[in-house]
Length: 129
Image (tube, rainbow, N blue to C red; front, side, top):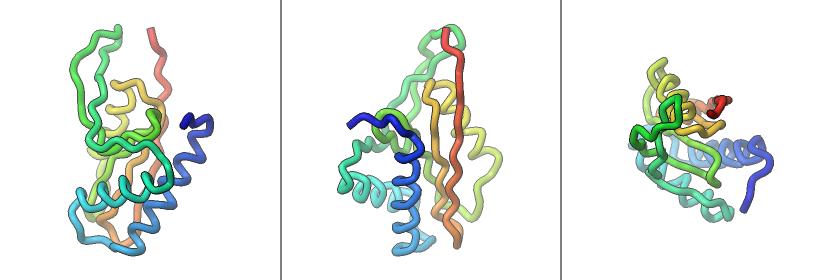
């Protein structure tokens, strides 16, 4: 399945996250929410990779290594999950760093740990050499 509209894909992930949070509430470990998203998004026909390795590139294109995205959806969306009281500047820096260094443009930072679900979308446009 090819996603031409990243906003529609983000909406599906956001709505599915809200449904999971409504049912499970906060208080579980991050892995529970990760597994729930994989399960529910997969049932909707989406390609979801869990703990998927993404290559980290330097500015000149040199491969530096890899990191593991919590979820990589439809080969175009990084989802970083948290289960904490509130997201911090470090969490934002983490997803922005992942986007830039892996050359993926769109990411979602989702926090299931608060009483109210927190979903933030981040965009990173990178000039490639």
